[in-house]
Length: 73
Image (cartoon, rainbow, N blue to C red; front, side):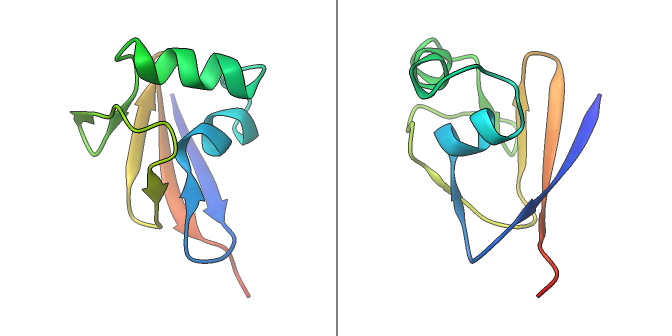
C-alpha cells in the first residue's frame, strides 16, 4: 500500500516519519525497526534513525511505501 506524506519544511527525520505515518506506536519502536534493518529509503536499507528525508524520497516499511511530497505553503 502507498501512503503520500506531506513534508512541512525542508525535511523530516526518519524516526519521526514512521511515527507520524502511524506505522509505529512510539519513537522507540521506530528506532528498533531501523536498527533491525526493516526500513528502506529509496530502495536501500537505512541504518540512520534520524536520517533527514526530503520530498521526492520513498520509504518502505512493513509492506507500506511512503512517498514524500512537499506540503503546500
